[in-house]
Length: 129
Image (cartoon, rainbow, N blue to C red; front, side, top):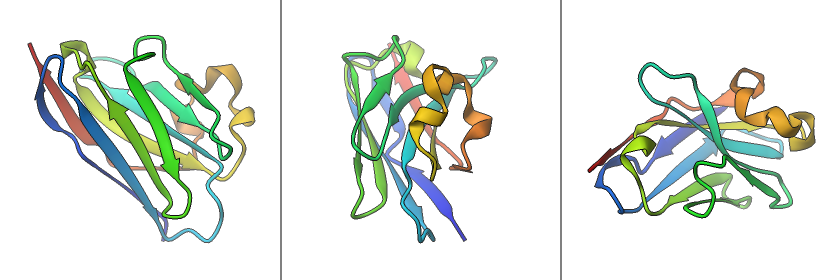
């Protein structure tokens, strides 16, 4: 059974850093496209960062220059390094994975949470001012 398990969330002060991890288990295929999404109370889930199997990345404008997505294909693990955190970054963060190419999702990937075949349960990030 395929499972995605996020970790690394928690409370942090504004300006601080956190590193999220997402471990994927139970797969026998390569996960080509991986992404982080987030959802704050009362808002829609939004894409934060995306990475393809070759390392090509894409970021939401709100996190560019502050967040870095990376992956370790040997360990089927996805990471999100979050620096210069702001209170508006407070949200539940979810990882998502798919064995199809990120090209399938195109420029609208940040709004296509439902199209990713595998998803985690989330880890809470709370940034205080």
